[in-house]
Image 1 (cartoon, chains in turn purple, brown):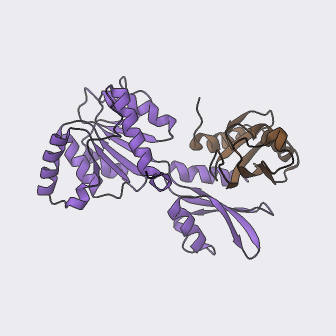
Image 2 (cartoon, chains in turn brown, orange):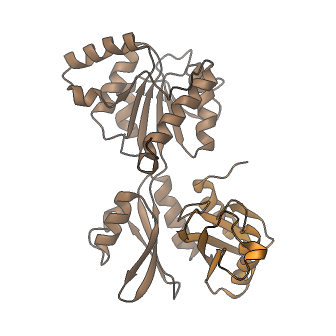
Image 3 (cartoon, chains in turn red, yellow):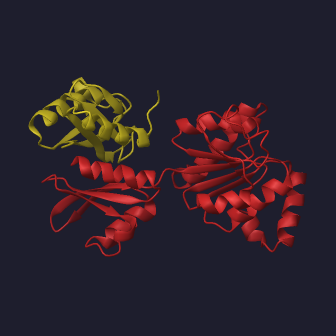
Length: 230
Length: 107
């Protein structure tokens, strides 16, 4: 692989754009096809299929074998609330190759001392989220427990194609949330996208355990096609 | 430190820019219960430093040896590991799966 090609591949990943590296396995010949170039490519059909499934693999074409390395953008987790659970969640998410951003307009919470090495925005979610760009490789996690901070984030999430939405709070809290969001014009099917109470039921107690249950639920949503359904 | 997919290819680029000989190994095909999915990478430099994995640790040693040859002559190679392989006793996959790994040099 040419260094320039590897460098382009890394640049696409950093910019959160999907790309496919096509390798002729017999000759070693390679080229990079960016997301925007797929439709005009001679292998458009195969490339679209690979991108849609986010799956690398071998294909045969005119008696030649090609390996498609599919590079989907890194999954991003946007956490609303610079709270105790978020402090536990951020370093764990890093180990899972999840790209974490924390948003909290309360400047006493959103401090670099509490969140070293994490992207941190001391802004209101409805102001910050459009700049971040919530795409289908994003998960939104609302943890402030305060409707005036969580609700604008959930509204932005519900209007996006993000693959996961979770909100902290008891069933009762969630019932009230559903009522508010229904009044804001969302249908029942939209609201069913919200995982609440958030996280897999592992009986979590401590902030770190709750972080594990949230991250496990995000992974389960991300890998749902691979899950063995009981 | 734990390496992620992002780190692995970024490291390959950084090592090459430092002037090291570098190879990338990629799992291109699997049969049966393979420990790492298709598309997984292992990067290796000329001093056998490596990052990432193509199996649970079962065949990394053999892939690294092969990668040194690839770094030396620049020719990409396809290598296959599995229980049916005649080298199975040395570097088979204990899980019974089979994998094919493509190894190429970063030029």
